[in-house]
Image (cartoon, rainbow, N blue to C red; front, side, top):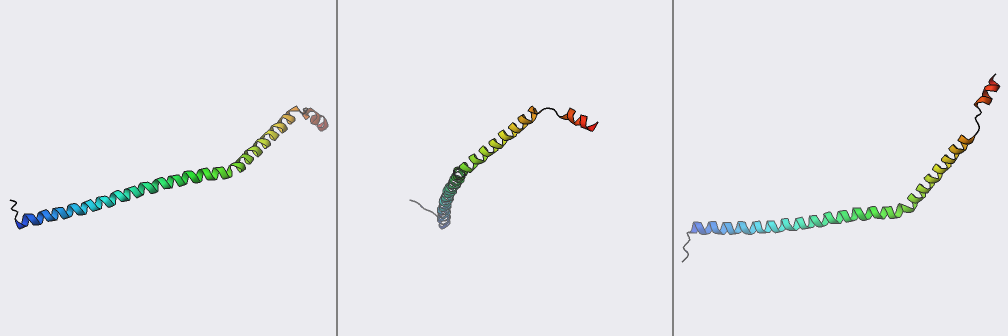
Length: 98
């Protein structure tokens, strides 16, 4: 014994229609959020993968550069050490200057 006036029935149908429309919008929003999360994760996987790939590719060159730097540094240390073992010629230069 549901006696609804035409106005109440119209308002109820309008509310149901809005509810369905909101439901569709929420499902689209949820789907967009899922895709956004997926693309965000994919972006970070690509960034991290690219970083490791570049490191893996450049590692032999980096090791070569580090070895070359160490060799030059050791060579400079040897030159400094050899220079400190030379006799002091400052007195000799003073004698020639007189």
